[in-house]
Length: 410
Image (cartoon, rainbow, N blue to C red):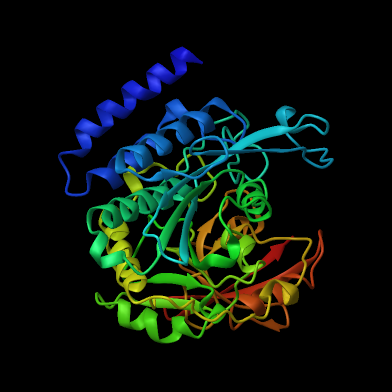
C-alpha cells in the first residue's frame, strides 16, 4: 500500500506541474489524476478508491475546508452486496465492501447549507456495469464518469473559498461520494447518517458526467421540477446561453436521488452519454476542460441567486422511472439522450449486437420498430418491450434525408 500511495503521489505532483501549463490547472489535474491507470478504475473498496479519496481530502484541506466526515474528511461505510451469480469475486455475499465518502465544509455561519456532490468511484477493471465486450479485464478509468464531476466540485470549492463575498448567503457542504456505481451507496449512507442537520439543507447540486459538453447538443439539467425556484433562476444564470435540456423528475440513476427522497430540492448536471460510457476508453484526453469551466460559471451564478435567510421551496415530482417499460431484449445501441428531434437517435453501436448486424450506424434515428412508431425515447422503450429473444422485425431508421429499413433478429 505504501508503494502504491507513493506512486500515486508522485503521479499527482507530475500532473500538477503539467496542469500549470493550461488555463484551468485544478480541473485538468483532477481529471488526469483520478482517471490515471495508477488508480486502477477507483472501484469502491479498493486501493484505487482510497488513494482517490486521499487526493480529494488533501485538496479540501489545502483550500481550508473544514473536515465534516466522521473521521476527519472521511465518512466510512460498509455494504454487503445481495446475492448475484454474476458478481465479481470481491462482491460475494458475506464479504462486506468498505467504502468512504469525502466531506468538506465551508462555514459562513448561516442557517442553511447548499450540498454540492459528485461521485468519485468507478468500475475498476470492468465486471458488472461495464459495456466493454473484451474477454480480458481492462482498467476503466472513468474520466468523464466521474473524474469530471469531482473536478467541477473542487473547482467550485476553490472559487467559493477565494471569493467569499459572492457566496455569503449559505454554508456549503462538498461531498465526494463512493459506491455510486454499485447503487448510490455513499449518498444513501450519508442521507441516513448525515454529518449536518438535513433540515438545514437548502438544496443539493449533483455533478455526474459533465466532461463532454457539446454546444450543439447542450447541457442536461435534471430535477428542475423539484422547486419553483429553478424555473426562473436557471435561465437567469445561463449568461453564456448554453443550450439546456431539462427534465423535471428528482429521481434518476445518480446521487441526487438520495437527497430528493429526503424532500430536498435537487439538480443533476449531465453532458450526455457517449460511445466510451462504462468502457476502458473513457480517458482524460477526451474530456472537454473548457466545457467544465462553462458549466462552473453557470452554477456559480445560480448559487449566487439563491435567497439569503430563506430556503427555496421543495416540490415533489412524478417519478418517470415508474412508467418506464421493462424489456428483455436490446438493439445493442447507445441512445443519444440529448437528442430533441423525433425518434431515437443512435449515438453508438455495439459490435456483434442486433443493430450492428443489421447495418445500423451512429447518427441513424430509429423511427419505427415493426408496427410500433418511435417518436422519442419513451416510445422506443415501449416498442422494445414488445419483443423477446428470437423475435424478428423490421426496423426503420432515418439516415440523413433517407429512410433505411432492415430486418433485426433479437
